[in-house]
Image (cartoon, rainbow, N blue to C red):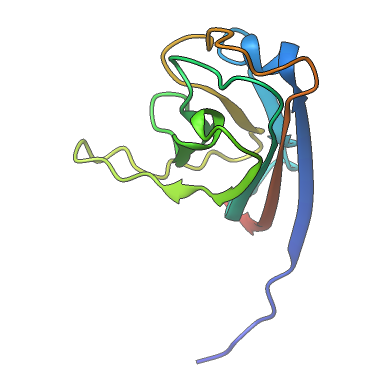
Length: 139
């Protein structure tokens, strides 16, 4: 058995309050599309939320995906935490057999599931930064 070194990369994305409120309607790129023949695979995603004033209401599950029908990771509690916080995203499992669909030469996106959040507040200076460690694999 031979072992090869796997290169890892880091990226981040900061979304301000206006972006959070439109995140379902306007998904954001977390990892740019790799070259043809390569797949970007997120290894770890975590979020740092800067809280200001009241929490966001309804529609607060943040998703990470390449195929919107099969999100790879999600986090559902940070925007309703009521305080600044840091949390990890969890790998999403599905009984439908559509879990973890990685697509060659496709950007890794992030959005809010089900619809845009409502401004339960969130405060004018609230923001969230997603941090991501990923690798590129042939695919």
